[in-house]
Length: 191
Ligand code: HEC
Image: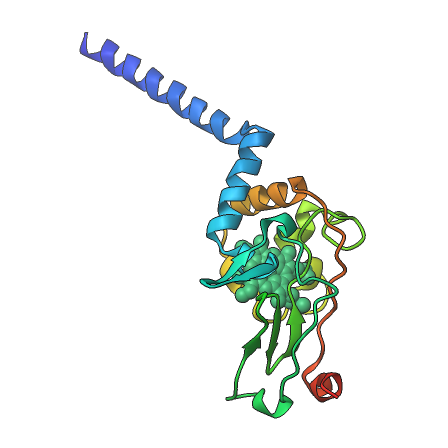
């Protein structure tokens, strides 16, 4: 009798773990996107990739422009390039989408699926490799600060997949974000 119940228990364990594995692999598209939305939210991607509205309480994300990056027509305030450099200040604009530091000036890219100006043409592989290696699209130039790819490189592949699925599912917004300005050119853009 004892051995029969052991057998039954063993069979149950096998059955349940098979269910578990199946559950993991057969996550529906909707569930994957929902998980990605949650991860993008708690990982703070909106902090830099969604333009802000200034309120008395400080900058809040403008979800109408969700994840569309630094607005292409935004005016940038002047700054004194001699305040910036190693051991000096790091600056950010009020939308928290443009940054100045010893690395030069960077702008948060458009993460919406627009084909010309966003990540519409990226593959899942581009995204995962970019986050893991810190190289543009996984193979190009180094991704500059303050993009926290050094944190993201530790994310589980399934989480990066969910984030990418979500980014591909959101409203495409046409917004051509400027490329980075090298540190030695900062004086020129303030003339
Ligand atoms: C502190 C600000 C900040 C946060 C937070 C942030 N990013 Fe970025 N991100 C940037 C900046 C700035 C760049 C552009 C850097 C450059 O031009 O090299 C960038 C670049 C990127 C790129 C383009 C990489 C490439 O290959 O060119 C992707 C994709 C990206 N971020 C995704 C994310 C995701 C997903 C999150 C949330 C987990 C996130 N970012 C959080 C600032 C940020």
